Length: 104
Image 1 (cartoon, rainbow, N blue to C red):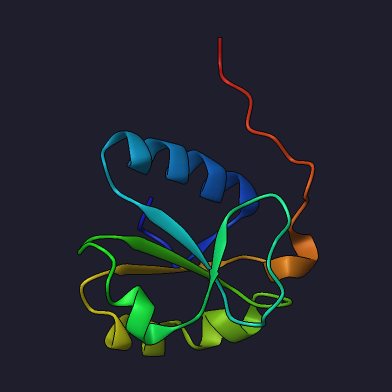
Image 2: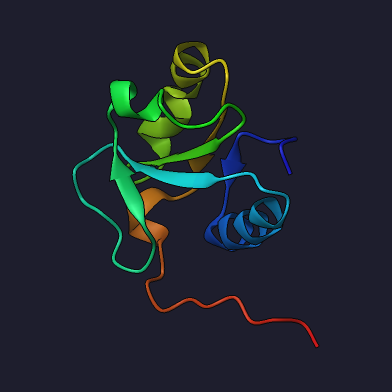
């Protein structure tokens, strides 16, 4: 799950579901002031983000995913108590109607 620095939208939904069962909060962070329609996001604000519980996972996104991927080391240094991930493809590849169906 944390072996790579980028999650696709599918990995975001699957990992969010698994981590929240374990009591770990996953927060999607908007770095471009364009919130995603179908998932709860927060605007990048280091002061407010530092108030989250230690171990929280921050998933950063931008328009294409390139900027957040390049800045990921900066985010990791800025938030050492948290896990930092980039959303692959960013807002451009985010499918608003995608749903994660339960396996039967």
